[in-house]
Image 1 (cartoon, rainbow, N blue to C red):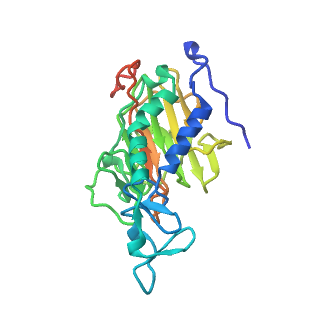
Image 2 (image 1 turned 135 degrees about the vertical axis):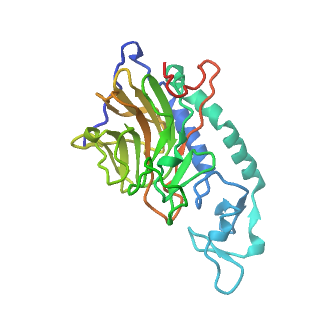
Image 3 (image 1 turned 90 degrees about the horizontal axis):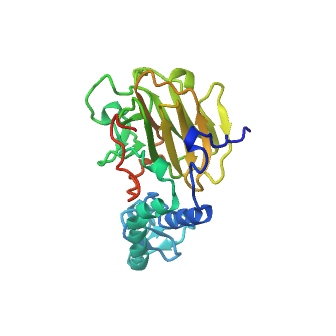
Length: 314
């Protein structure tokens, strides 16, 4: 399997394009994973403790398998039954999770010490008018997953009719742009950019020759870039949060593993002849929330400029 490329040098951007403290970064990721509910895979909200030690959100208790002849629920990990009256809140853990959520932007600002890249952050949202009708989009327009039923959205030419995907906003015409996406434990996804003019009414082929510059995961472990032919990628630790840096002036788009700051892949010869859009394709699954893709909030660094907005980029 082909090894990931090394970080490219972009004139004065040569070294230190992603400076990070790997051990501290890994520790922060472990804290975040320990703060997640194993049912909904989001931060624990009002964590509840079962007899066996299993913890999940209060609202997730209702999704656990019920005891046939009583009011107990079975642990999804060990099948131990806990009676309704024995389910206890874990207030201390709840306070810790709240603090981790509060500090996450600051932690990322400390861990990823690269103001030259972060100053090109994009305050990105999802463009609902492009969303396939099976996609469920959060109210803040930053998270998306596939649902079992079509959503009641208006017909429009911008919408993907058959392919489970959605575009981001703003559109890019020039300059440098950076954003981050949390892919969590999704077993299948595609991220990157595409030409704004791509056909949205039929099937699509994710390839750089067709105007898609993406990195994608299949079967939980097969990672590849959409070159022609595909470029297989070997990444460790596993991708859970992806940094994407688009430089339209140079014609490149680079992907980074934010668990340790390592470079994953860079496309060259990315066309700037027409506007580009951020591309998101979550897992085509309706069984759980493992297919959730979330755009990460902008890191507010005192030493960095304000986030880049549409068509600025310089």
